Image (cartoon, rainbow, N blue to C red; front, side, top):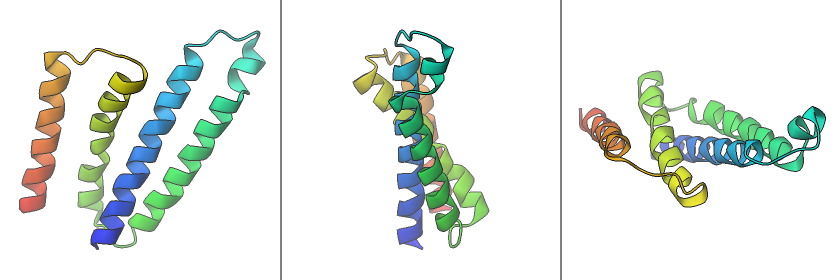
Length: 112
């Protein structure tokens, strides 16, 4: 089951990367609405979403539904880290505390 948990976490990471790519595309200026929606970043990001969805479906073959919901929350941690690294977003004390609570919750769930 550990392999499927890793697949699940990778799928959440891929989904988080996709969100950051969409955000970078949204921050750019585009000539018109069509180019805003149909550009390489957006198409690539949605392709990543598709891949992440397929990996999640694969992982749910062995990962219990209750654990999947808990593992899915790692996306918040990934997005916070990627937002800081890629988008240069500020991590204030509330975001840090929230992410620490998420990590603690995952650990408590895993132990129990």
